[in-house]
Image (tube, rainbow, N blue to C red; front, side):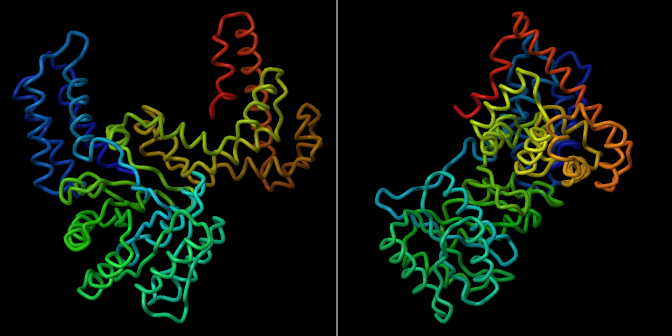
Length: 448
């Protein structure tokens, strides 16, 4: 996500390295490169120009601190202005005082609208809500079937009227069904078109007028760049929606939509989605996105994803085993499974400050763990719990069973033993007062 933009901005900052102070000349050179990087990323030209003018005004108007170099100060200012440009702060979903809350989903065909509808249902279900999905796309039978499959996967009921071709009636009836069946949140999926047309706009406008949703969201494919911004403006002129959802941020996106859209339509980005998995949905935080664009990582989002996947009781159990140096391959396997659920591996690593820049040209596949998993699955239950019993004969059998060379089995066992030795040293240091106990006990309290 935003790899090219991040790389180009990083190169622009290098112009200030070695400079003793900020001057109008070196700021102008740096901002020229940043403006070019933004335009290359498909950011609206006026937005890019206004942004760099604002950064210039801020940079030349500040006195540099002794402990801060010109480059560091410029990064700080650009981060602040990027955050403002993308909305400043996270804006949540408007919820009804009297249930059910009604959320209307709009967007073009192919934007990922129906998939997002399923993800949103799962998101609210995880927050303790009892959602209902309403299949309002009467033109594509596949859309109704797709929503049905998604509803089944996330454990959320789907309201549909297969023979009814009136989406306004279906939406109204779905809300009445929700009221009768104690559903406190209704998400209405609607039809999309390949392009904006009058019939589409009239229909979605009629649905909104009939059901009066608390929240109308516009879903847009971030890979379409400025076209996404233009489409958002066309929809907003008619619908006056409440927020934007950016999908496919894991694709070949240049980032222009995320940066431009708030300025053009004056509506917040509320969710971003990077991937096809139903867990691949995040609230949009402008400051965190700015950090990622500037290669500063996003530790808060990483921690939040970890908290969602790591069970507190399991974490405490793991912590006790770590203290006793009793970790085994079953524990190792369960941690791999949890990490895989957190999302795209390269995306996760890029959230660690500095790692995104280091791994810029490294290809990390989503199935990077598959060979390790195959080796562990090839072990017997006893071998997983007692790795020390794995001798040469067992190693050959495990390698054959996993379809991997024995060298990889040896490497995994060696790495596992190295990890256990490191854990033992940490425990000894902690018991001797050399390490804060909070370091050893942090995992168990992660969800508290």
